[in-house]
Amino acid sequence: MSMTMDYDDWRVKITDNQIVALSQCFADSNLQHELISDHCVTLGVQGAWLNYDVAFEYLLALESFRISAALPLDLQESQHGTAYGLIGRINTDLPLGHFQLDTRRNCITYRYNLPEIVLPTLDFEVIEALIETTVIALETLYPIAKSLLQGQASLEDALSKYLHPAEGTA
Image (cartoon, rainbow, N blue to C red):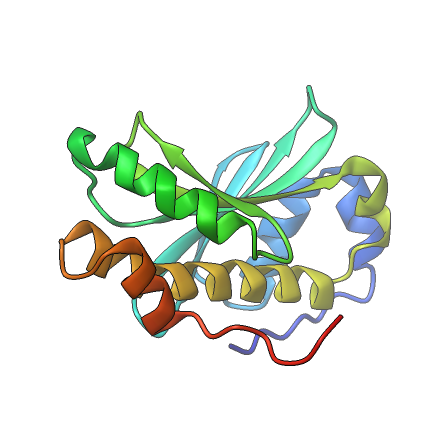
């Protein structure tokens, strides 16, 4: 995934109005996006498995900047328990962010929050890295969730097939 950013004054613009500035940067870079409100913009991102709408939200009450995306699996209510089990296992290995079950939309979402204090120091390369991290997390979970929720594999089998343990010691 390659995105180019032409703004030299990104750091100044992001402090004025985080979401509108981000939307303008996406527009200037010819990236497919939609400004939902002064507090939310979505960016269309192509992954290896699926297309994702990555949302950038400014949460005034929490004074934070949230990056999130839904895994487009239409879960049935009877699958919520299985999804919770999977999410619990996956979240223990995620380096950044976490997955959650959105019971209103019946889907699994990934999200990562940044405190507002870091916003003035963000540049487009950091935003690009956060987008890539989000897509990598979704792309890692998708085949596991799909095989598990379609009854093709048990949780342990799905995890062992698609996740590879880290080598070495910490």
